[in-house]
Length: 69
Picture 1: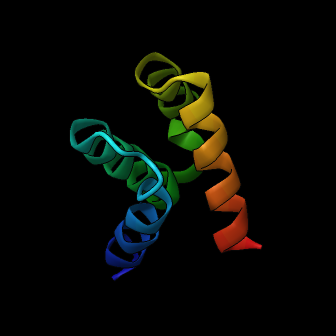
Picture 2: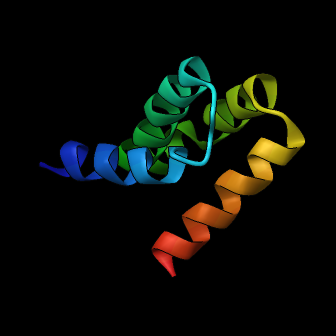
């Protein structure tokens, strides 16, 4: 149940990413961090830095803050 809620939240956040392949990666990474928390935070951050541009990371951060705040 928690994973389903995390995946739905991740899909909403990742909707700001235009490229489908990156959107899929985004959903997987955000779901992972939302479910597993601090234990995977550094790993997920590194992957996000590798995959997404600075502008995409900014958009993701803004969208996540909007949904969580």
